[in-house]
Image (cartoon, rainbow, N blue to C red; front, side, top):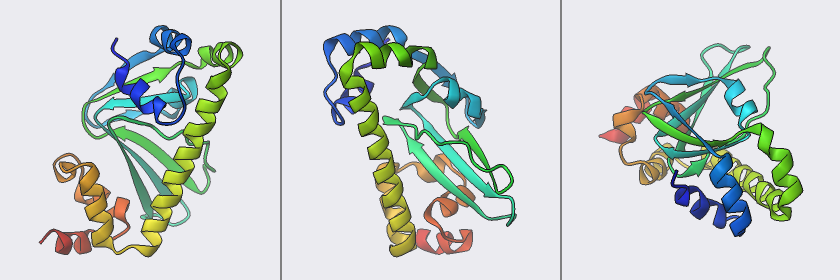
Length: 188
């Protein structure tokens, strides 16, 4: 299995020793998901570090107290899938779906203890990844709050130019925080 993609990504966060890379080569598992396949929450519990090598993943949070209110967050290839904690099931429901055929390289939970024990840099790497995810989330919230919808759409299309070919207008509008009709005016 070629893991150079994930190592390049991890190196941007913290240097990966040759020993850690060798361990990860053995420990990482590949999982393929078909288009529109729901990825169960247990998958992320059983595999706490998930790297999206190919495809696009959609995480949707639906408000249960306010039906019809939802938020969408896309994860694109060559990135770590955010590790969300359990949400209050009375207030929200969360689903994660592959919106195109996707390949995830995941680290099974059974390896975490050994990684923390054998590789001192692993805890710094994980801390850095979580810090990056929080920064991305804060940027996402800031953009939703202070940027115009057309700017948010332009930023999303810079990351994934084929977005309208792989995601629904409803999902894209939820991801940028506008009504689908407003999104249609941006596209004209």
